[in-house]
Image (cartoon, rainbow, N blue to C red; front, side, top):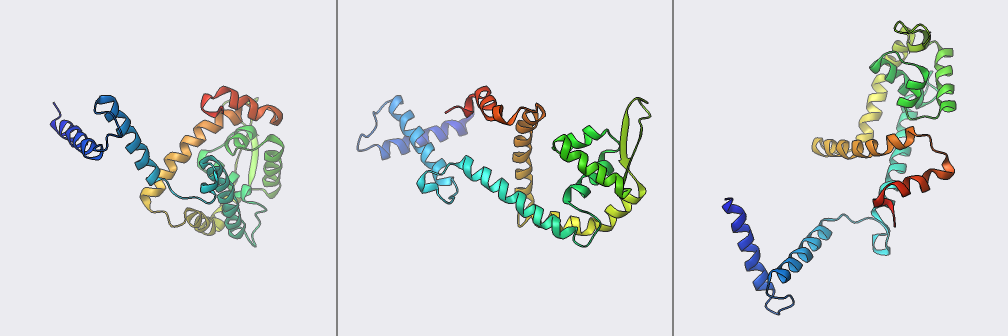
Length: 222
């Protein structure tokens, strides 16, 4: 038997009796359970962070969505600075090159999907990189019927020349989070990524997207 658990339960019962001298709760197991649930709920509420508009009913979901939008804009501003006065036109240019350098050759659509882009936007980026001579297209060694793209030596050099500033921009985005906070944020973001990526991959039409997803997940229903 775990005597420490028994001791904790006895301590809770003692606290319940002391706080229930006014008989606000029935002096039985049901009263104890009600008191326990209320106290647990109060403790969780005390640990909640404050956010702007909370007192007016602004939801945590609204805060999360807005913060993600803001953080994306902050990150873009740092990326823009990182490629200032270089041959890179947008942050997507070096992100596509980093993807190819990290994961190796792949088809155009694999590269586009890996970077969560729609096909037209992704093709513009790829064509721009081909024109710059930073990536090249060739037949796949595994399947001659398939075309793949990879980063060229010129692309590697251009990327490496800018990597110091890109790394600095990346570090700034992570801000003043300590190591433990970074690891926790990665876990949370990966959980969100695993939820959203399969939805994005279905390529649902915008007019049906929200209604379709909200009908499929019970926790999204009002």
